[in-house]
Length: 149
Image 1 (cartoon, rainbow, N blue to C red):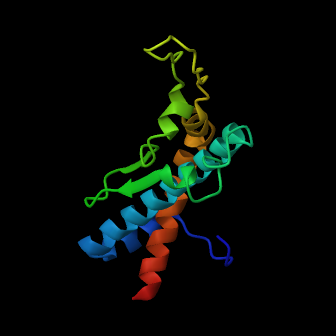
Image 2: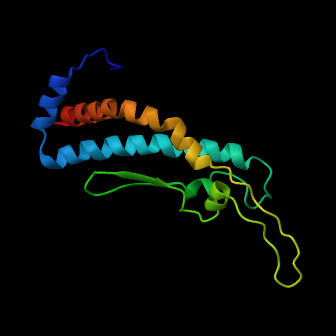
Image 3: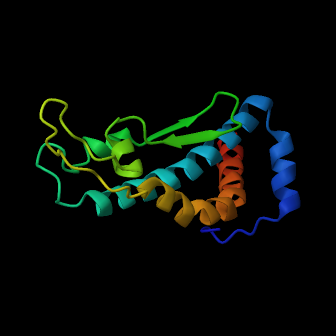
């Protein structure tokens, strides 16, 4: 830990058992939220690398448009955290790509987008790190809530 205090598993379990059910739920929520933010941040980084400057100025990544479409939600029971890209419908086209688009009227070709799989790449890159650090996140949440008492 940062403050030089060592915490063993039995001490963490004892501190957790001393918390009431509402505080225990908050511990889980905080740990899940921290884990979700890791994936959310990596997804935004991957999206920036995919979008770059190749898109017209109205749709360019500026932190206010496409990046806000990457949502994080922790359920009320604190059993799962969901990170998804459907906050902005345009992100699915970057993730999955499109087929060749043609006009019905004259068959003019309007192009196609190749799949970049930025979300899948972010998940693959950070999945191991999230699960490796989840115990540390729970310990930090327990100690923070226990210190508030």
